[in-house]
Image 1 (spheres, one colour):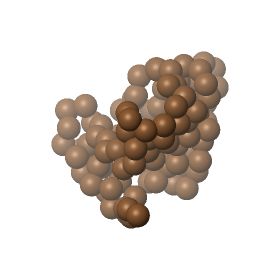
Image 2 (tube, rainbow, N blue to C red):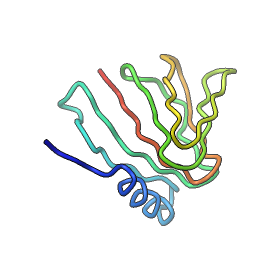
Image 3 (cartoon, one colour):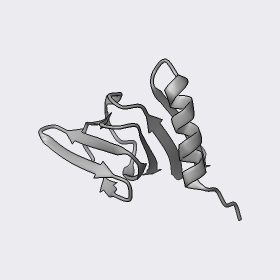
Image 4 (spheres, one colour):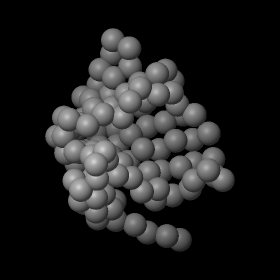
Length: 108
């Protein structure tokens, strides 16, 4: 068994995002390309965007801290700490309203 503090990982990734030229940082906390499930903590500084892209499978995100907006077409979902958002199986993007950290879960 492996145990990780998502709060600590989020805090670390936010510090890294603050110094990155992209304003983003991420760390896979479980799984990866050789697994069917992957969980990644992603941190973004306020105003940064993950460009529009498609899912490689079913996906959700859980906001760990801060506020974000998930955008798909004309639909928008605002999420803050503790919110779970089911990511639509369509092109979408993510915008950080505040400095934000979230857990992205993708199942292939």
